[in-house]
Amino acid sequence: MAKTYRPYVPEQDLLLPPSLREWLPEDHLAFFVSDLIDQLDLSAIMSAYEDEERGYPPYHPVMLTKVLVYAYCVGVFSSRKIQRRLVEDIAFRVLAAGNEPDFRTIADFRKTHLTALKGFFEQVLRLARELGAPRVGRVALDGSKIKANASKHKAMSYGYMREKQRQLREEVKDLLAQAEAADAAEDAEYGAARRGDELPAELQRRESRLKRIREAKRALEARAKEEAAAAGEPEGAGKPDSKAQYNFTDPESRIMKGPDGFVQAYNVQVAVDELQLIVGHAVTQETNDQKQLMPMITAIEQQSGDTPSALLADAGYCSDVNLTAIAGTDIDAYISTRKQKHGERPGPCPRGPLPTTATVVDRMSRKLHTKAGAAVYAARKGIVEPVIGQIKQARGFRQFLLRGFEKVQGEWSLVCTTHNILKLYRLCV
Image (cartoon, rainbow, N blue to C red; front, side, top):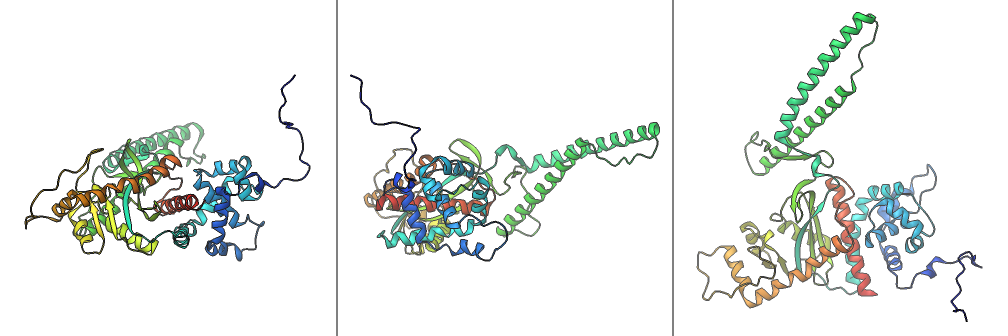
């Protein structure tokens, strides 16, 4: 007797038009994102369309917002990949209600409304409080390098620029001489009626490169003057270091040392509470975290509306200036004074009182060597490092899609917002 299977007829049409919503479970992330976006204030996005009557009716901004936020939640960041999901993925099709905007529409929507999307971070945090998440208490700070949308091989040092500028000038001079010689020969052969003002393609390429190098040199010189002014040096003292780098693809990114060597990147910052909700975020062009401690405390206060009661940070944030500054606040700080090896535990706390000559770093070191201090600081890794891992490894966000410091800040805000949405989804569902 032949085996009996359940009916399988791929060519069979459905009797009635299906509802795609019924193809997803009720507790699916797509429904959670849709309901959450409906609770947010989208007036900053909607107002851009209200007074515009020209052209064909646009896609609904609420639909595009839901699709974009859901895409970042599930680790789909490319506008072309989002367009493909709108055809192939049921959850995307449910959110879009059958609409299929192309990748250019999605990309333009993201760029146009980046500032409004950035404001979602504070709104989602307020919703988290309303859903029962506690107010900011103990937070942990960490920084990570995210690659810029640019190659480090498109960067050039100031010293090499000067050398290349001289080389290109000589090449342009030689090409001009060759062009003049060719013109003279052709005039002698064909007469002087030829127009003769066409530049050779090779000359155009070298002159355009020379122009870009001049612009890059001016940018590096301006940057050096700004740094000198910030350091209180006399006017005119700021000169670029010969190793100062300029990237022609994304000039506002910097070459930074990451786990895999030197990369063209931005330094992103997150402050995470004990529920692993991000309560503060920032992007910086600094290659290390040393100057980010107090700015991040300000960011937490502005973005979450609260001041943390305690703060945990690794040795990258340790300096005399930082420890002195945070000592003047009501925040109970636990900041490592040196980089620890993996699995290393702090030694026993020295006996006796601190000497009167002890520095702020010595005092912090003693605090972390006490049993209570060591136990508090040990929680840092379990609070903040999994969040970086979830963003970079689980969702695969390792490189910005947008270029320029302001746009990168907006994109990082969207990444942090969607992390919090995923946390709320897991807490609620």
